[in-house]
Image 1 (cartoon, rainbow, N blue to C red):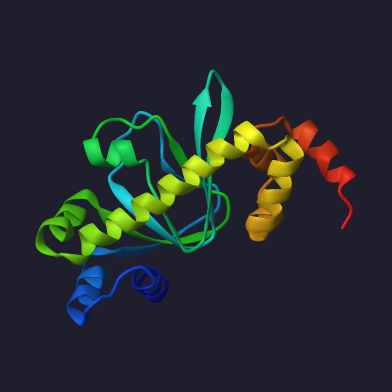
Image 2: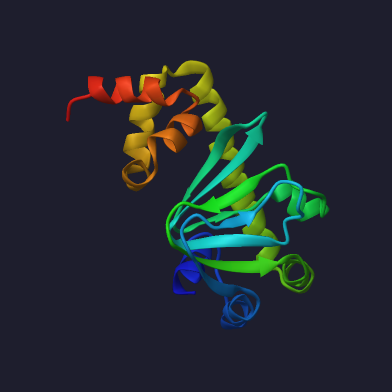
Amino acid sequence: MKNLINYIESRINLSQSDIDLIKKYFVPEQIPTQTKLLEAGKIERYIYFLDSGIVKGYQNIDGKIIVQHLVSEQDFFTSLDSFMSETPSIDYYETITESRILKISKPDFDILQKETKFWSIFIKEVTNEHLGCKLERVKDFQILTAKERYLKFLNQHPKLALNVSIDNMASFLGMEPQSLSRIRKQITF
């Protein structure tokens, strides 16, 4: 819970009553490796804070796994469209490593939204951060070579680079695993 509160406090000021509400509505859970938290076709019922571990978000398009999210600890994730509109998701979310999460349900999320001032401000901050990351990712796909995307990934996410399979990393970076293997052989450290 401490990491979640620190994460929120790094963006907005919290009172003790705000902290008490966070502790009341977020539920901790330990999740084993390779556990699906969400499957396509199901409605997302939670927003998750990844306290420790690694999670991937992906879609299965005609039998091919397309990794769109590699979530490292100390960050939020969810299938946002499904969560907000309560419609079936097109995403899967699965743990890559043993993970500790804190989750908040849609009804509890809505209570915080209605009854507090801090929650709406915080959600806006996090949504804008994640939107900025998505825009940067799109831009990277447009202007960076595959090798440049990989080097940027290594620089920004060294822990992910060490703990994510080549297949998942290659999919996330928009290339085939064989291409990523060739790029890795070209790089000397």
